[in-house]
Image (tube, rainbow, N blue to C red; front, side):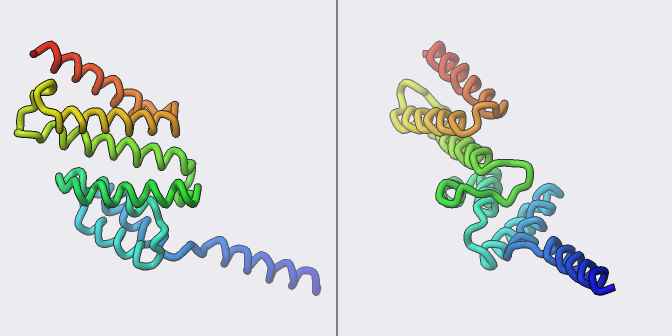
Amino acid sequence: MRTTTLITILLGITVLLAGCSDPGEEAYNQGVKSLNAGKPAEARDMFLRALDENPNIAEAYLNLGRIDIKQGTYAEARKNTRKALEILEKSEQTIVGGTTWQEQAALACNNMASIAFQQALGQDHKIEYSGSTESERLVDEAKTWLAKAAELDPENDTIKKNRVFIQKWEKQELNRQ
């Protein structure tokens, strides 16, 4: 009888503890749901709330960066994405189930490449690759970020496609000259 009671109590405690999440994780998960539902303003609020509860949720910064990229606010996108990458590299942990910190860091690097490339394309609304040193610098930056992303997650198909895309784009731009 005593053993049964003790086992029941231990099972209850285990179930209770399994349902607990880290500070900020619930708000982060709500932000992901909102982002997936096409509600970026609501998602932003939830990610910021998650960061108020736990400033070390790299993925919240990563998703804020994604929202900023879509909105074309590249300075904010850079800041948030760099913060995500800094936290991931320092902690070597992720809260996203089924992924590694390296995969999340590779996504951050891929996003940094996207920011740089979008900024390169935005130079004077029409880029002349060989004639614009700022555009060239940004394209080179994008390639550097993609190389780092590939080192972190060599099997990521999106990163591979983005590297090929930039190579083809460069050739096309050079052929226009």
